Amino acid sequence: MLVLAIDTSTPAVTAGVVRFDRESDADAPKALATRITVDARAHAEVLTPQILECLAESGHAPADLDAVVVGVGPGPFTGLRVGMATGAAFGDALGIPVHGVCSLDAIAADVSDDRDLLVVTDARRREVYWARYSGGKRVEGPNVVKPSELDPAPSEVIAGSASHVDMFDLPVEPVETPSPVGLVSVAAQALRVGVEPEPMVPLYLRRPDAVELADRRK
Image (cartoon, rainbow, N blue to C red; front, side, top):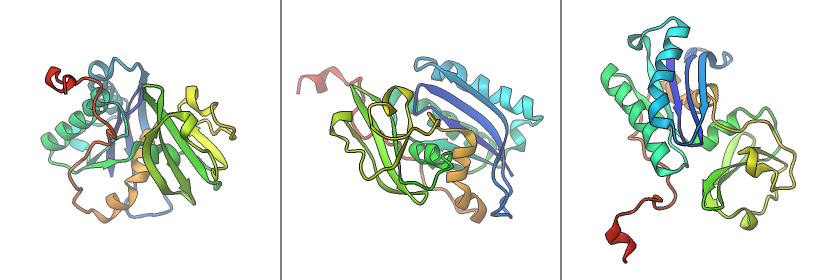
């Protein structure tokens, strides 16, 4: 099957077309085309062009897609909703399922290491989003906290935002943002079974930076 993968939970605007064999557990998802633009202010401008470029590069049209996988965060409000709205629009227009996955899970899926893993990404406000993994499974999080309040133990290795992983005394795996293959890997079981995806729920974990004036006065 052909899957469109999207993530805008970090400053990286990520899109990709991934080939996935739903009949074989041994056949890992394969990226046919990937586009990544690192610009926290460019999500809305570059995401759809990136998707169209990936389709063209892979030799496919939108009608060839069988499913969409979208990172639902955690991430900042504005950027995150761009990716989710775009993924939902493609799914609705094409009549194909849209699966939402935790973006931190997608980073963890790209770490080829059996050690206990801590994933951190930039939450702004001098905070990080984080989750812990053991044996490839999320065992804690996602949550948001100040780096000084996050105990790296018992994690043995860390991945995620380059500007934050060095704050912790752990070996660093060079996976900074969700990849198209990582996103599809997280959704692999649901894609194989063909289950009806649940409605996507964004993992904001806190109120958006922009609030109504009336809310500010409370």
